[in-house]
Length: 209
Image 1: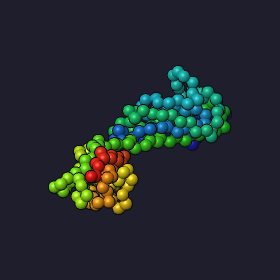
Image 2 (image 1 turned 90 degrees about the vertical axis):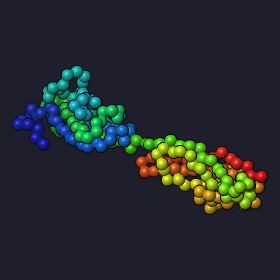
Image 3 (image 1 turned 45 degrees about the vertical axis):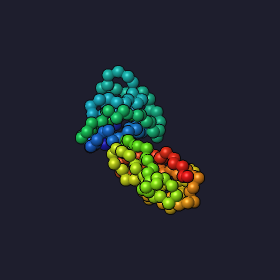
Image 4 (image 1 turned 180 degrees about the vertical axis):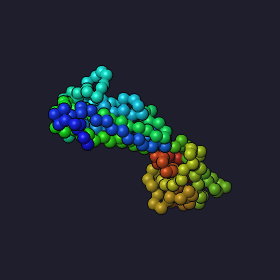
């Protein structure tokens, strides 16, 4: 990159611009800029200044000097609100300023990072019901009604006796033998769907008589 026609009177400011695509800004959270600059920098997102680092306040021109040389190896961070992004094309621009026209070097690194937003289910408390005409008694087959979840997930199950998981009891139905007389039975229902945080809800306990 050229420093200009004179090594003794180099350009103070160099400008950079990069466009990128975002399909759905709401799908991102924890946006952060990570900057290494030599000597100072001003960052714009979609035409709006969002951060200046080691640059004095006030109006800027191409001759504005950075505040000081600083540490060109240090990573500086700045958190951004998600409403700074738009659906479609976004433009990130940076102007890097030197401390003087005789500065020996210029450089910067910039990373723009974000995490996928966590989506959560609307859940319901599952209900244990018996397929046996005599209700919930030894010998009955128990099944679980998951209730209404939104959106519809894929379900998995774990039946419990007195709060302890029953080995191998991971189907929607559970055969209640005489071994469980006098105990309480519950079932944990877990919903999973791509893009959503898994959710687990436990039913109310039923007593076996």
